[in-house]
Image (cartoon, rainbow, N blue to C red; front, top):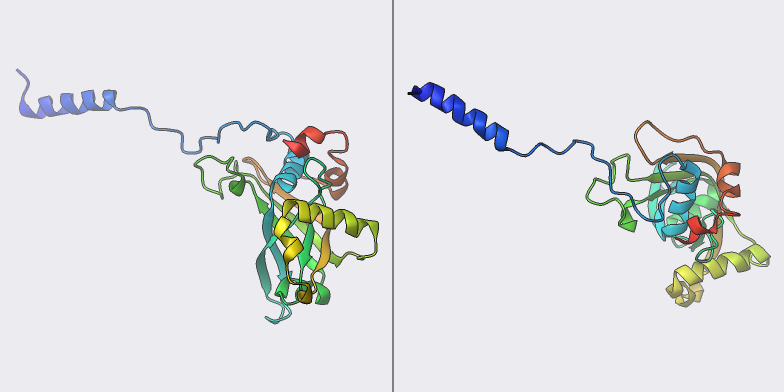
Length: 211
């Protein structure tokens, strides 16, 4: 007959055997239809830009003595299925983002995969939940140009209520001229993508832009 001490040890051993194996600490998120694989960094960057509708624009604040200032801003990079990768914005100087850009064009624009609902239950900071930061110059688009017509169509298609925003707020179209790209879409640090790789991608890959 087992002594009480040995009986306790045996019971504890049996309990451990019956427990389910713990889940991996850094389990990858599920494969999502339409989202490029982690090995396709440029495609992932363009996918994030095409699928999202808003992000965080960070400027050098003219109101806060040059401190960084982040602002949630709506944008569009083109008509649905025809994204060009360049973010366009509809901004008023009543908002600090536009005022800042007119004083100092240096800007970054950050997007996350998380709002798309494709990260599952993982935390937004998990590397497998993609995030993209585009850095460059936030510039006014000439309202008389064909680019302005394209940008306005792209913005108003993605954000219909913009058409009814107050005329006396004097909204103007801005675009980000991209100089640097920072993408995290998996473990191992940021992926190297040049602005030319980013902008030229998708000319013959419409499925990535429209999925």
